[in-house]
Image (cartoon, rainbow, N blue to C red):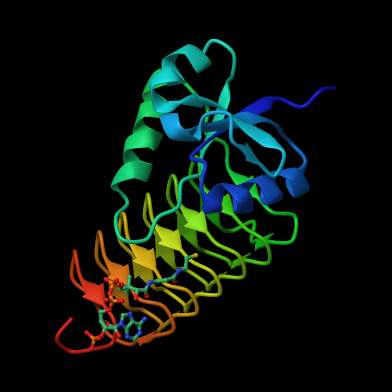
Length: 209
Ligand SMILES: CC(C)(COP(=O)(O)OP(=O)(O)OC[C@H]1O[C@@H](n2cnc3c(N)ncnc32)[C@H](O)[C@@H]1OP(=O)(O)O)[C@@H](O)C(=O)NCCC(=O)NCCS
């Protein structure tokens, strides 16, 4: 049986990582990417930018599946807008799990979330919609990652950590067990976070930030 087509919304560097995971997972055929007008017809790892955001309503006639493949560091707004637009238009946003990742049967993942190479999502973890669980991250038992968050490469969330909606946790950062990170936070890379962070915090390990 032929694989269903999927389109990737976002044609930057993160899209390359998504392509690799989707290819390895093997469940979908990548029909193309959706990018900015100036990116039209660009090739990314052999896949073309076939349309822009404005064409999404038209694309629903041809394709059922979509994934938001735009990256996210300082603001989740673009990923949220694209996700909401795709859902409203009737696309299905599947969960994508790399074959090299481990996801406990006692964990839950929301629509449009991608779990990338070598990640571990352990028992009791809840991950919301449209999240990026990036390569080699570890989500320990009973942690929660709310919708539209990005847990970036090599990050460790220890047991019972909560990451609020629309937040970003930088590469290699370790969060102490039970710590709560608020909504729309940006937590820098390479840090250890031992205390709760309020909504909209930017944490770089300095008291003034
Ligand atoms: C937190 C972050 C977003 C801040 O970026 P920014 O707004 O451009 O801020 P700046 O780089 O100008 O840094 C501001 C200050 O915080 C410090 N700082 C920023 N990030 C820091 C970090 N992770 N650890 C320690 N100090 C940090 C800077 O040294 C600077 O200090 P100064 O004012 O004394 O010079 C960025 O530094 C970061 O960590 N990005 C994450 C990268 C990443 O994980 N990418 C993975 C994608 S998969």
